[in-house]
Image 1: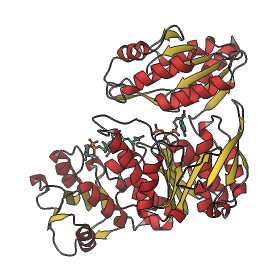
Image 2: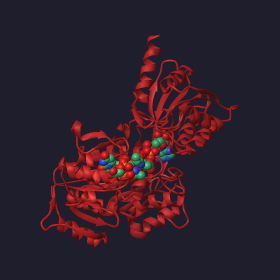
Image 3: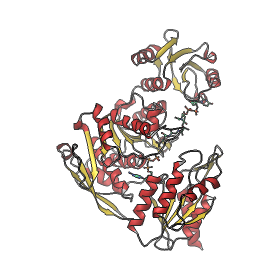
Image 4: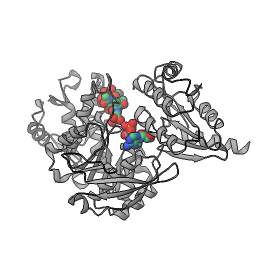
Length: 512
Ligand SMILES: CC(=O)N[C@H]1[C@@H](OP(=O)(O)OP(=O)(O)OC[C@H]2O[C@@H](n3ccc(=O)[nH]c3=O)[C@H](O)[C@@H]2O)O[C@H](CO)[C@@H](O)[C@@H]1O[C@H](C)C(=O)N[C@@H](C)C(=O)N[C@H](CCC(=O)O)C(=O)O
Ligand SMILES: Nc1ncnc2c1ncn2[C@@H]1O[C@H](COP(=O)(O)OP(=O)(O)OP(=O)(O)O)[C@@H](O)[C@H]1O
């Protein structure tokens, strides 16, 4: 792959991004990157984010022949210099061109929402794999899948990667024969222009609640909502969970660029809105700790044409997963999935670290789940409690250091509402003392309602929680899913993962 300076000039000029270009004629680049550690001969290097000039010096040494930045650097003397007024925008536009616009050869379904993006993405992939014979790529918080070989599936670093990585993954997916892509688009992705210029075939807005607000993410809730709404503005078809907070704002954002004929609204049960027609309603047929099934009803003409009115079993329990399933049914139908594809896909789906359940002989059922803020913990514990009022809810939970500080109060609140016993423990303490984090969560718990234990060692906390369970107990190991690290003092310290720890404890109990 190669990209010439003339094409770069044209793209950047069209978008009003150029400040100055210093370049010879007939220059072209064989590689693009934003990381000096990945530079190869004849690379165009992007200076972005918390960039330091020494990275450009390193890039030059490694073979970079040009750089894109928002200012000139002496370290780049002698290289082609492309000075722009927004490097993130330039990077996304040039990245799309360098990888030859792979999005045009994929049907791209993109999810946003505070909760449910990963789960719904796995649901949609599972459905579409039946439609297109396993040709669905995935860019999710957990895994990135660009093909069906083992080496074409790898752990993700971000929920939504940097633009150059997105286009690179898309290119690989196309070259590996993939025809569809399901991806998560975080609000940060819009904030940091990682998807600048990218247009999606389907954009889905699941829900919004306060999260990711703070000095390093979104300054205000309004900014968070605005960033999420951008997915609606940049999609050909929009799907909206009408039960979300701020639904009318989201619908207005969608209508700004999308014909209402291409906007699909869905809602639980028979909820109606005054000025807006709900296209689909879904209702629970079964919603227990062992089974999950919904009935889908189409209301509008465009919804009826999709032929997805049916009953669907969902392989992952939790009433909140019903809306996730509904969204995936509509999204994949827009990519030609039949109701049969959806029935099979939803029944067979497995989402790593999301409501993974393990039955013990005498200590109840253990759920490993990624719930890591008030909204998700409240939804999860509330669901378990209401489905098994006689069983004790026992929760192992911690909260990360140096981020999401309001989660601590949220956990205290959710535990007080629905837990019987809590084991407070470590979860990515970063540069904070885990004991201080635990004490803070503890300060928000009503001790008349919850029996609280403190155990800093996460493995030991899980063991103690399982031993505290009886036959009816529901033991929730929350917050990490299948995360294989504990982030401690800036180091990703390997951790077996919660499911492995749970299974080891259960094996130990069986051998006692
Ligand atoms: C705020 C933000 O977008 N941060 C991301 C961003 O940081 P950055 O551009 O400042 O990068 P940096 O690591 O400080 O380094 C600066 C630049 O120098 C380069 N570099 C660095 C070292 C070197 O030796 N040579 C070199 O060239 C880096 O590649 C980079 O281009 O680019 C980095 C990769 O290039 C990301 O790792 C980093 O994510 C941070 C760590 C992060 O975790 N961000 C979170 C908030 C995030 O984006 N989360 C959302 C999900 C949130 C949700 O659920 O809604 C997500 O999409 O994942
Ligand atoms: N639609 C939903 N509404 C509320 N809670 C949900 C919903 N879907 C999933 N959850 C809960 O949120 C947790 C995280 O789900 P998931 O990973 O699918 O969301 P996400 O949007 O990708 O999250 P994050 O941005 O935090 O990575 C689940 O483990 C579950 O407890």
